[in-house]
Length: 261
Ligand SMILES: [Zn+2]
Image 1 (tube, helix red, strand yellow):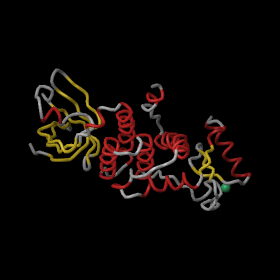
Image 2 (image 1 turned 180 degrees about the vertical axis):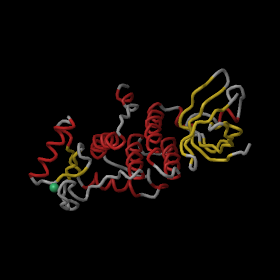
Image 3 (image 1 turned 45 degrees about the vertical axis):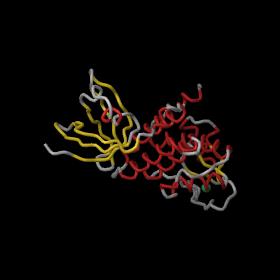
């Protein structure tokens, strides 16, 4: 029985049986895996603490019949700040859904693992608002998965719109649309086909495009060191979740909980 040593961030925890726990862990080399932690709820102290949700740990595992079992675990970072704040915790749970979806689109999980660890750190300790962190992380996930926002040219005729003051972005088409009647007509038909209403075109000004560009390209350690205005945030709130659902072909509903508070 050979021991596998890996870092990982625990994204979900479910208790199982009387003393056991299943951990869903995002790792740099193995992607997202489920680990059975036998007897972990019976032990007090280190091992139990290191198997809490959103902990970054070093794991010692063994594999049997294509299942992973916990042999040992060492806590690297616990992000205590997350557990005490329902807004931050909900944002982390939402991003967990996004990461566990995105990992299926990646050949290599290292960038996603690093992004998840930095994002949790920012959510737990940063001064940037949780909602802004969510949007920045979503744009980065999309970019890493090959679905980055492309706002340089009209997606229908190819006309350069990069110097325009406003770029109209069609949610139904997931790309910009210029003023030409033919391109507008193409969007109108798409809208009709998808059943998305007329609000499906979102106007992106320079500040919004700069924010999208920053989220896509900033070095990871600086990714969450930014400030955006309420107006930019509200445009991103309309744009990014719809685009994310379109690209990953599923809804992400956990943040709806915050709107009900
Ligand atoms: Zn066009």
